[in-house]
Image 1: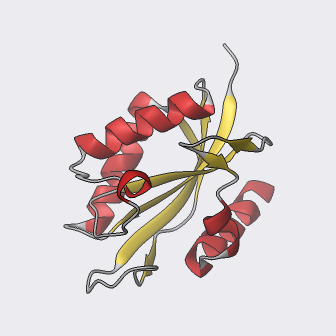
Image 2 (image 1 turned 180 degrees about the horizontal axis):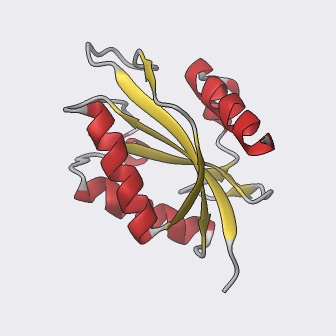
Length: 143
């Protein structure tokens, strides 16, 4: 069974956001793979939509046995199990959410499908909070 390295960005802006992130990480470790690196949590304003609810965000790296598409399917199931009601990739509308988990990198591959694009372009080039977390993660992995 081959192991892959996936970088995930998690965010929550409903309920107890820090607790939501911790719960999601526990579920990721139980269902998807082992967390091998993580950043500190970062509180940020919503991006690309208006809300009074600030986000708690974190970047993690996991070792997983799953392919990119299978990993995404498992992530979507995990999000729904935590109360995520709608999926931005389907609705094309950003809104408040209990949990959001995005695959940013997967090994060193580039991947494009209707469901998933790796690397995640918005996190790399358009979202300042993402770039901060990914830079922190890169520095952690160097140690």
